[in-house]
Amino acid sequence: MGRILCATRGGEGSHRTQDAAAALARERGDELLFVYIVDTSFLNHTAAPLVVDVEGRLERMGRFQLTMAQERVADQGVQARVLIRRGRLRTELAAAAQEEGADLIVLGRPVDQGAVLTESALQSLASFLEDEAGVKVLVL
Image (cartoon, rainbow, N blue to C red; front, side):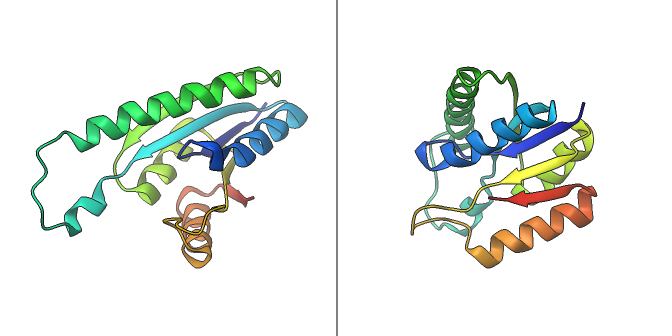
């Protein structure tokens, strides 16, 4: 039995990727692990001082999104574990894949125009993860 790590930011835009990862886990008999990375590095580029605990709020939102993903795939007959990590997206995904013994990392293509990751950035991330973590990456 292998392990599939599915990076997710949650929300409706992630359902297609989550469903595909669940279907792969079911077909292969693999364990499914949803991971949400709280990456606040973008805050380094803002001039305004922040009074609120952005990292904590993002983590709570991520936990909610992961719980919803777990429930959705459970309805499809797939049990999934969840993992939240804090840090830079690419570094934390690679570390999570290695620490969890992932055989495959699943990434989703953004479905909306305001997406943070462009197609070239997504391909760069996939290449980095394959090189750094030594794990095959599937971009859906």
